[in-house]
Amino acid sequence: MAFVIGGLFAAGIYMMLRRSLVKLLIGLALLTQSVNLLIFDAAQLVRARIPIVPEGEHALLPPYADPLPQAFILTAIVISFGVTSFAVALAYRALRTVGTDDLDRIGETELS
Image (spheres, rainbow, N blue to C red):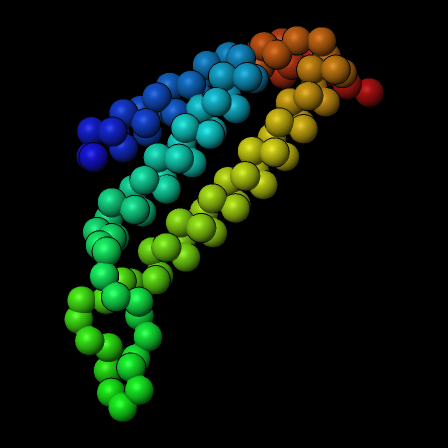
């Protein structure tokens, strides 16, 4: 799993360093998915009981599933969807305004 996560990180960063705006968006998506996998792998999620204290008990009975990493992953998915959709909207607007997806040519263009 570590090789998959490292490969996704490397591919995402490589794609973000390219000159094309579309490759930048693909790299952003790869990077967010690699972060989700990293959280998933670091949490060492297991199939276990739900984390609810039974009636009459004072503590959780092991083994139980930790809900915190699941909440982190769900939050990361929602945030990455919002960031990606906003980036796609900005890329579409830049493509319609400038007429190219080359980041060097977009940076040279003076918009008034």
